[in-house]
Amino acid sequence: MASLSKSKIITHRQCPKLLWLQINRPELIEISAATQVRFDEGNKVGDIARQNYPGGVFIETLNRAEAIAQTKEAVTKRQTIFEGAFFEENVMIRADLLFPEKDGYRLVEVKSSTGVKSYHVDDVTVQSWVMEKSGCSPTSMTLAYINNKFIYQGDGNYEGLFTEADLSNQVKPNMSQVQSWVDAAEKTLASPVEPAIAPGEQCTDPFTCDFIDYCSPPEEGVEYPVEILPYGKAIASELRGDGYKDLREVPADRLSNPKHLKVHAATLSGNAILEPEAISQIQALPYPRYYLDFETIGFAVPIWTGTRPYMQLPFQWSCHIEQSDGSMTHKEFLDLSGND
Image 1 (tube, rainbow, N blue to C red):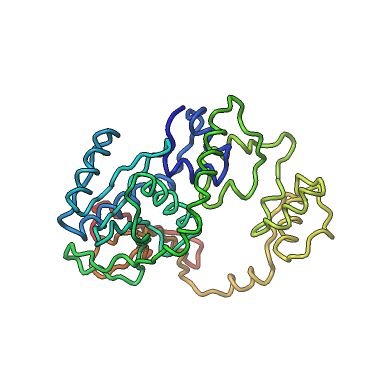
Image 2: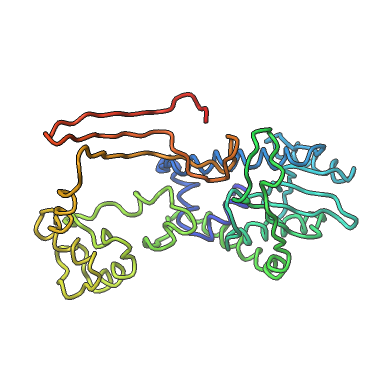
């Protein structure tokens, strides 16, 4: 059986079927643009974290045996270690940052989020468990996450980009559970049969599954699934439980939210609902009328002077200008330079 990794164990905790499909049906993976951006941002964040601590040893090789040997050598020399490699109980981990202390090493896991999430604790717990098994128990376990108040000065200095949270008191009590997590993941992967797990909240929590289209194909005869109700996860689940699949089948008295009732009415009639009051307000607007749309981007690691992490920065706009005679002109801008 192939070895496990920290990410595989965390994936299994989200959904055993997800891990099984990743290993056995990789051709079905559909990596969204948003997922790819998250990967890329995570890599940038890791680069900056290492930059903030010069003098460390970067275990860059992807060869397992070489990485483990280099890590052991760095531990012997009491060096700061980046991407330290440990392999125990068929589980491979790479620790983002390891800082030597009097009695061992302080483990720091780096994340591109702006706060501590529950799955981060599991993440650090798996790393700490493997390190302990290898004889290099971390003295403390810390999560470094993005400080969204940090303002970049444009000088290449990212000191202050990260905020640290000590997770030791949350991680240590959970370490005894990791063996059961490993056993469960190995059992799933040992099976030749795809786990029979129905779509649910695990499909998007904490991450949207790469196999969501495979697991939730369009239902025959269901053109308007009840899930189209805006912010209607709870009512959609309730309706599904009562046997309703298509919104057109749902009696109006099953809905109470005004927005849901509008969506329901429009779905039944097949016509858009145009509010008279909205029409009168728009007709009262003076000319010329400007219809502006714009797009923004937000970097985890800011690249322009005076900007913050994840600050939404416009890079494109489109504006239609309507005159009183009904004529329309269009202005637009799209930045292709990469400059501020």
